[in-house]
Image 1: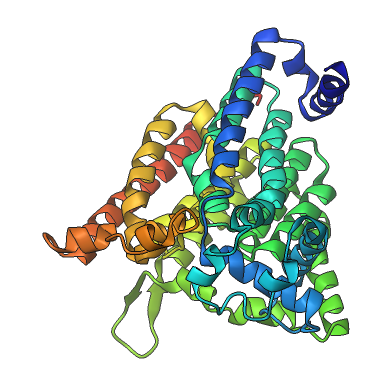
Image 2: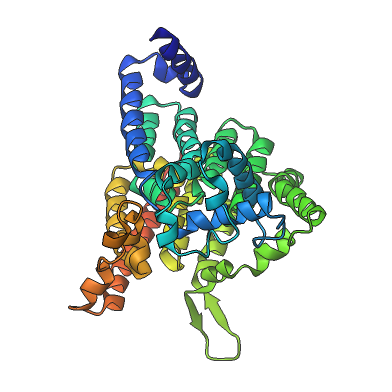
Length: 431
């Protein structure tokens, strides 16, 4: 038994900061919530399926085994990272060649879930996400010097329904981008600004959205123009490298793909038309510009301002823009700082989650019975969706719209609370 326990003790001694290990109650609390969160994840990993998980591995399989390096639109890094995952999985997946085929994503769901090793396959597909997900929780412990706040952030992450939903139900790799964002915040907290921006750059080549955070990192972490240029260089360096590599692999240009990707149009969804020609005011752009200029002219260049600004930008996005369900995880690393500072944010987050559940109804069976088809395809695939049931009694568009509006109202209230605190507080706090 000691041979089994010793390696785990050595591993945890490196993952968990010493300030927590020296406190027996803090150490026990970490182990308890780690176990609870871990068991929830292990339970969901093999039994929940979503088409997005198959899509990313389908693309990776075309690259790895079918000589199709041009698959996908940009994001070379994440595609080839999943290629690496597939190479590792192959010896562990019986009948690998039968399931990883060029038709993987286009074949009917019924075919895939009837595969005799479906549970093992789903577990392995999500296993890399588990590593990055748990890495996020441990980075939060390293960021906080205050044990109580660090434990609060750790628990908030480990049992967070949005983290669990996005990673193990929707099956998306948001946790990889979030891992690099938290690593960036960790380096920023320790005044290692070049490393911080490089890690933020890694998150950008994983998912495009952290690009909107880059200007805030640059203007808040550095006062002088030359220093800001240097930080911007490190933030864009991974994107530059991946663009060059893309040309060598004859892949689409990363920067061009980022600009033309249709998801960017979500930023322009809420707008006011000023009657004449192309005279529009985009609500998100107005708010983003306001907060960025405020950060540039009024910031005290503190870590606290950095994490608060990140939270404000994400809240503004979710309040004013359309978003896919898995995107909501983008807010969680920044919200963790607010939750441990002000308990009101936990209450408001719970309201957000309840509204978010209704918001997901517009995706029909993708957020209902289809999740559980590996257990029983014939039963869960034919269940009525919440939208179908609600629409019998009340127009579903109005129903979802009401809760979406409440969600936006709560998000804007969070923005107000953060800004009010920033305006009135004169001294920073120790995290």
